[in-house]
Image 1 (cartoon, rainbow, N blue to C red):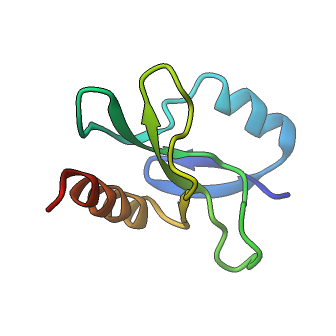
Image 2: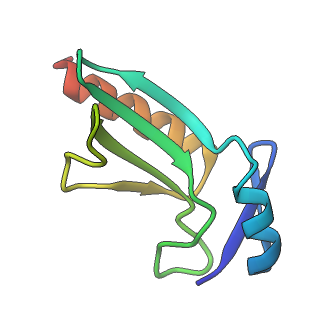
Length: 99
């Protein structure tokens, strides 16, 4: 598994030790939106390549969370870039708000 850190909105590959040091203190949130009283859409930079194509690593993840529970949606959506993650986040927010 490849490790990445963020430099602004750009990602760069790194070693596991540097990734661990970075991830424990970094702001990894791309967006967080309350879509109802108890549901939140959260998109974060994970920094671990969760994909199968090394030329397009999947480093960001969006999921739906319920207050007090981790993930309530069996689907997790993953993205390669900050821009893709922002767009994907907004699409899921619209979906759950019924737009």
